[in-house]
Amino acid sequence: MADDHIRYDILAQDALRGVMRKVLSEVARTGLPGNHHFFITFLTGAPGVRISTRLRERYPEQMTIVLQFQYWDLKVSETGFEVGLSFSDIPEKLEIPFAAVRGFYDPSVNFELEFDVKQTGADEDAGIAAIAPAEEPAVPAPAAAKEPGAGKKDEQDAEPAKSAEVVSLDAFRKK
Image (cartoon, rainbow, N blue to C red; front, top):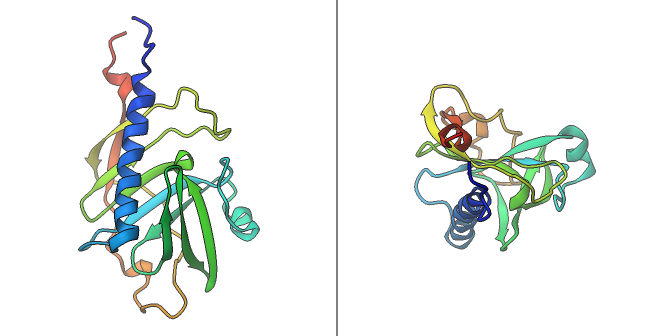
């Protein structure tokens, strides 16, 4: 097989992270449309992730947050986003670089992106996964996220998440 000097795998991952960035930017500007909501899984130890010590101790490797009913101050930049959420009635500000995100899932339309993320944060051989619908849940149950004084609907009242089967692009490459 020929050497890939262009690095299509990195270009594809950057493009798909751009989809997530564009969606979050629009939501930050106008709010969530219709029934759309997001499960976002990220590595808590990745470079640039800023969360409280309490959350880092509780989630030492990765964490899944839900942006649906009760979040605030969503701000999106070229390199990441920050958002306010409440965990056990304690408000928290999270700063998450896009490079730390492992998964982005919108169960309202069964759309999922999954990324390989290196714990070291190196811009090495990070591959992208192609997604196809499946039956099993894709993300673990999220931590309860409530804004103080926000609506009474809880995350457990949300529809159960549908999942996707991950198929590596390497499976389609000629060897």
